[in-house]
Image: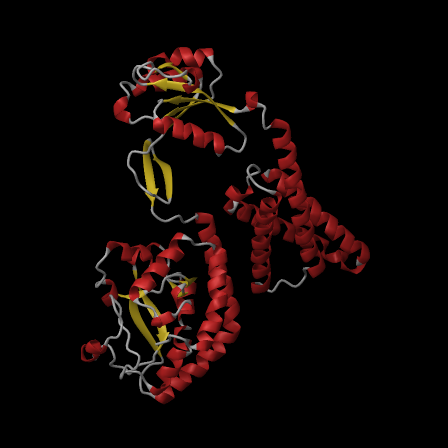
Length: 459
């Protein structure tokens, strides 16, 4: 499917480029440049396709499902390529070729995907002889649950050959429909007499007298062996097996962070931050001069914050308080209006005249774009907290917010900002972490603009 998608993309691009040059022969000098762009577009589509590979499966989807999954891949590919072309100011690209290719390629891929899904599953859905043949070690509730799940979630079809019981296969007076083929010690005979491609162990390790017997039988027959590793009743977001030399390490991850998607998020952060500098840098100069004229002291304020996995970093802000604000912290702690381990005062006496405006308009946060470029922060993520506030955390779950890179804006900033309680902050941060997508980031960014202009809840 990957190779087919690449082939279709290349053909569509060459067709669109050929049609364009037929009507615009004066642009033929840019033919080689457009071919170079094709290589970059193809690599981008491959990377984005990798990110959405689970959604691109053929089975179990309606026509609209195929339209949605292909459209998402092409949209993000288009967005990334456009961002790169804009940042590097590439001028030779024809907009007609570029937009025409993405539209044509999206339509053709959707039609092809729908046709292949219809053809394959209408022709071969009931052809069980070509399904993957699986033998399950175990015959209890866990084994039957696994078998049912395998059959209902297979792309190309799975047929359960039968079950082998680690104890007496006749102890429960099983019906023939239970498909128990015998005792686990008979595995060599069962593998020899049946077509079996995979063996899955679905019983706890303690219930097997000799795991080596099963392993040796599978090795002799050239059959893949898998182990159902539900040793503990946990709710992990992702479970992975990593090999360190010859040592298998089973990882239980509480937060799913697709590495490819995180790379795309990082590239999007850098691209959008660099693009914003055209407007931001002149504003930096104006605000810097205004702060210096308003009160004595530096224009910028740096404070140590807790970042990804609680690593400390210096966060940049425009100074909105008097120079000795940190030293006067003890004087104003009794005025704290926030609950939980955070500190907020609506009318903080340490705020300068200009500082109040900078806070209400969130202009004081703009220097954090430098933190984004340095990699300490992202455009979207839980707000970085001061070391003082982190030390006051009284629940372990509060520290889950450090599993992702902190951001300039976040879900609670577009849901009430400082008017929310700390528990609501935490709930929205955890909701963001557990449901993160690139689309969610863009929605938060779009909602941030009206929230800033409304100055609702800003302190």
